[in-house]
Length: 490
Image (cartoon, rainbow, N blue to C red; front, top):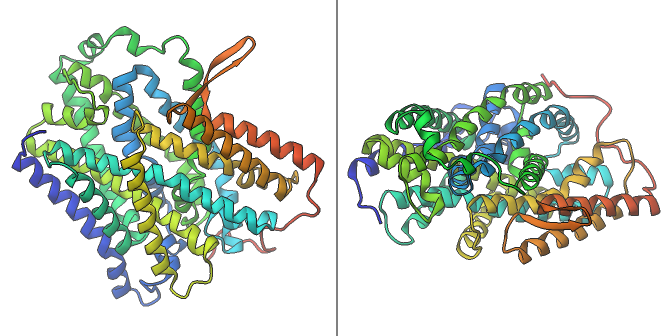
């Protein structure tokens, strides 16, 4: 365990605590100064009043899309597996056209129908309460390992500061619980600005100073084994399929869809799809930290500690504390949106017509975080990134109902339910057999290789949907919107 450095710990506490205080108090402040807005309104707590413009949406969507997955898990995988860990870059590139084409349509359907979750949209499309319930439950289950990854991120940096035992995990859980309970969606929407500025400062300084400290980029790459800078034989297929499955899953999660539905207009979403690739540039730089750790002589068996150890070795204590705070805030902001998105599923779909939906949402978000805590304690994933990929196996099974449901081709609710059930059981079974690894070996004659488990399960799901829809076609079309568009409300 590292000795506690008072400068590093003090700077960390200053920035991390300030973010929590600012985020937690924003709802109360809005209630004081806004006569039109109630701080206890459920739509205010869960969707920010559906009034976020382009700038807030850009930071919010980016804030819940780029998480501890980016700052801790991706560099850790690059450190351990080399170029294979860069699959996250094409994944983020693939997803932006998907956002531009699909998400404005989902936003319009949600605004016209008053929907706040994916399960709302699916029920409106298929007129099936059973399908609504399974989509909501899937979102709840899928987001827990993703929140677990954020808890690991916060715990990791607190451990790096020298705090002993289980205290880092307890601090991570309590800080996230307080931040979400008090602030609602306005908390991460506001503090996403703080988070991004801190991350940009930390990353830009790191990619400038660390190569200078290790002799330049030439020396950096020379210090890394050549085999690590290239995909090894057999890694091309899992690299490509993980990128594709991650892209398809990215905006099916409750938290990413919450950021979309909280937007002011469909044009806001399109604008963000154009500018969000800026985050991919930053992601590429962050992934390089895995190589920089090798050049700096970082040696550890706990891959999640790679980036904190690198910052502590190269930077003075006060700036290392700032960088570790940036990582913790980078996990706190998206984890809050994840918990809120999951809570929306309960109040809107599983337990509707609550007398006090804000309280119900707060309690649900707390229970979801407890579920994430259980994932941290009992799921023995080899890499932190595997938690996110495990959630992807679940959430991909909602793709047919939510995305194919937008097509003019009619699919039946029975087909969607059967596809979801078989695809989920198939995917979870493979993950369990493979020890929570996100890829599975496939041998089909001349074709042989490791394929993303989530993509395999989705393939099975789609086959079932198509076959059953052909045998038992939908009886009638269900309208998902009102006649008058409100895409750009006054």
